[in-house]
Amino acid sequence: QWTQVPEEKSEPVQGDSPPVQGDSPTNGANAQISTTTARPLSKRPSFWRQKAHRVHQQAKLHFSDFLVNPFKLAKNILTLIIFTLVGIVLWKKRQEVLILLTGEDKVHFTPMDCVWWTFFRCCGVCNHEWTRCLTSLPCCPARFHGSNLVRALGSELGVVTHTVELSNIVVGDIPINRRADYYLSFECSHNPPIRTSVAEGKKPKVVHFPEVVTLRLRNSKLEASLAITVYKLDLVGSVEMCNVRLRASNMITWSKEPAHQTQTRRFAMKEPRADADAPDQDIKTPAWIAFDISTPTNDQRQLDRLAGGTTVRTTIMDPSGMTSQVRDMSVQDAKEQYELLDALGHVVEEPPEENLWKLDCYREVVVVMFRLCSCCSAFSIITLLFSKTYLTLCTNQWRRIAMATRLQPGKGPYSVRTLVEIEKKCHELMAGTGLGLGEDPCRPSQKQIIDTCDHPPEHQPVPYAFGYWGQKIFNDGESHNLGFSCQREYCDMHDGLVYLDTVLLVSACAILFFVCCLLRPCANHLIERAKMKAARQHRETRSKRNQFEDPYHASPLQRGPYGQAYIQPQRRGW
Image (cartoon, rainbow, N blue to C red):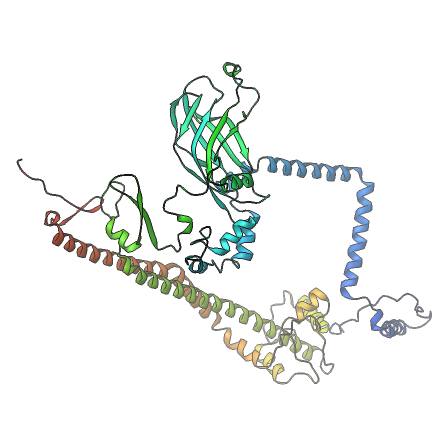
């Protein structure tokens, strides 16, 4: 009788008539089952509706308990206050928190950067450098000549930065009465601060700074103001003397004014604190700063209109020193003309420019091989684990059917719920018995499972791999089974995979270890050897050319502690 799974007791439906007294328990159970099955399917509450109802009842009970329990109310209020205070402190000390987490006090990202990268650059796919071909034509206006049209459009819309130059910087009436060392700091947008050189031992009445400061500002209301701060250099640290904040849109407007108008402007600066030092109380004149605001006119190389990233642009002064000439040359010519030196001035070996594409190809091949081998080995491991799990679940399903056919023969087909109940009862009865496989119907052997696969019960549906978990979680193994069926062939596959799963798993892990720990270092070592060989050949070729052009430098290269360098011979006597 223990092999017969009891029927689930169904709750009586409201409105149905209870069983008549005097009837047998069987008749009452049949009456309850009949009333339950007679209820229309559309009126039966679904699984999610029942779960939502239970959660609602628990929430109602919890809320009422929350109201009547003053200690719990005080605990929740105290927790809310603590979280609020922690949030306020984190917001007030956000710079210190950022420095602790990232080492920087600012996040170098703005909403305008997101708009530019997403909509104008198509998520970083396009840079629109081809528009420079159109702006390089003679008919293009001078304002946009040689520039990127999309970037120029973004700068007009306030998405991309404008370039503003500050020159002839003068600071006066600094609130201090003695000579000191001063420097300026310019902070704009979310970029790192720009600092000038230190003006040493200057009087606070007038301090000049020789730098030409280049700023990147957006013509947008969301752009942060330009902060200019004067610092006094102390023995330890610096002291902020005065500062001024200027709107970015005003700076851009002033920089675009005609050249015949006055571009020099003087702004009043404020002290950072009201309680100034006692010796400085007699200073009544506010501090000020003056500078010229313009577009990049002092940049003779015109780097904003330089296209591509393979051209080295420099300026050469005329012998008279009055004018300069812009010179463009390729990276290869620049490397040939200017030798690569280390910190002590010794020549450092480097591969020639014409061989870099080979090294890049080698590097790309290594990266592709590494990714391909990593993906293949990882895919093999995942496939092996999934196959092992899937075949094990299917074998367990067929094992439950084999147990049911031997415990309840002739009562098929068996539902998933019936199979789960039989397995549960068998586990309770077989615990601690020590019986082996095939010695009891509750423990069928692999041969008996394969026989059940070959000859299943009549009208028994094909089991599903995840039917057991669907029954455990959703109480409905027929509907929530993920659709992975278990065919008859899977029984034989599981029987053969039992002896090979360990070998396959160890092999896949060994391949993954080789790819991650041995393949890439060995490939990098080979690429480094190829680079050193190319650099050595380039050095020998250059040495022969120098020997032919200038016999005075014909002495061989000597290797020192810092690489190789030419050793110039010394002349004897006069």
